[in-house]
Image (cartoon, rainbow, N blue to C red):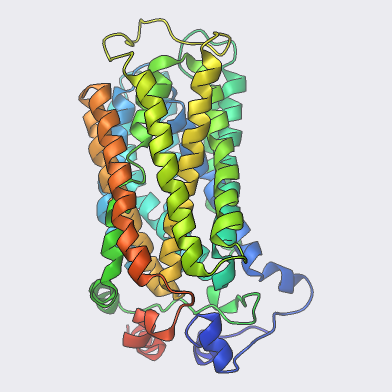
Length: 484
């Protein structure tokens, strides 16, 4: 039997298991296959496969360094354009999500990945089509803002408070399988290549996979039909007016200003990709070694995300506040460990010594094993960083509307940082300057998050933490929709 949004509104008790249990409002899922299909973990897995096919293929392409091209300049400019539009539109994408709903938002966003990858195919066929790559990157920035805001809201809202780290880890594992599969395809297709760039078949394969991702959002169910494992119901997407939803951006900031302490962490969260992919992977290795590095990088992310999510952030042995500090401490330790390690490589090469005509390292070289282990540990750091960031936001609220706004802030600031550093790489800022700025921002981002963890993270989410629900009740949203 289906449930209407209005019925879901009456059933909803604030999103937190404690609050809802106190009201005695517990629900059962449908029986049979629908009961399995409507499980939160099933929906998160479908969401993971959407990102497997689209952002996963983008990651596989980016991880090759230079988008798989000999020259990384066009890729760096396209990435700068992508993250610039991403940064602007992500700030408002939470509002778009709350108006359009998850399926329409994801469907609109996934098309951009197919367009972006097709631009690299066009460049392989017509070398003068570099401007197409840049324009496609700018369009993808808008689309990616929609995809990642919808993903962040659903992934943080579906689990119970005790499951958030595990759900984030499961999503991240499936999503990064896209990077693993994509990089494996690139590695196999270019194993015997001597051109130092990928062939047309690689781009065509990526495009086909992204088109599958465009279709997958239709298989997601409405959030208000999802019942968590503790019997509580997920809040419905509000579908407010645009005016009301834009106001919620300022409401979220004013009512929960502790999110500001996570902004430096958000800003740094994609900043390090430029050095890892263009200034290390593309600078030092030939195309097949780059493909192998890319493969182990995304594979390690699966273990890093699930490891910190399941064994640390959701560990039943500790209270939530203790788990927050443990997760923070592990990420800080990795930030300093991998950057100290990387410094001893970076000090030995410059842009002048690693130009297009310079000899590149192959995976058969004796120095390769030590270098590839750095890529593995960078992959672990990235996955643990992103998982911890999402978990901290999820610890602040269970309300999908509020989490959509937080996810929009996250992706906006993340993209602003990435846009700046990709542009710096395009204009040939020295590798060492980019590396040091990456290290400093990563360390500062984690230190700035500490006051928020200490003063804001509680052992349980209370009703007053559901800011948008309290200040903008569901009835207001329903009325706005009916009158528009």
